[in-house]
Image (cartoon, rainbow, N blue to C red; front, top):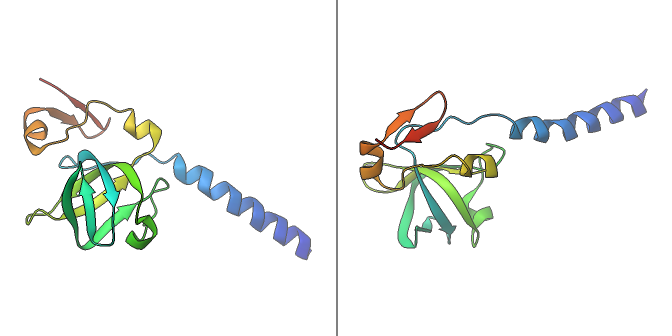
Length: 127
């Protein structure tokens, strides 16, 4: 009996990561694409420029789970991100290969204002 419970728990635990990766994440229209190099929190390099994470910034990993900034120190990733009103990076989504393949995606606010966004398909189109 105990062995059956253990086998079922292991099977469930190995199945959860696979299902979490297949979930389509919906990004907000104000999300920009860039490359982040994580430094000592809250310091980051965003597209090669010094930047900072906002207090309460949320970073979501490949499985859409929250990731602590300290665990990412020294790593580099292609991300979608949002910026709060003071210019601090607020939300970060580390992208999967499938998400990176969705192109074009705006890298600047000017591009986002001039392009069209389809929130259901999660794709941008240039006019």
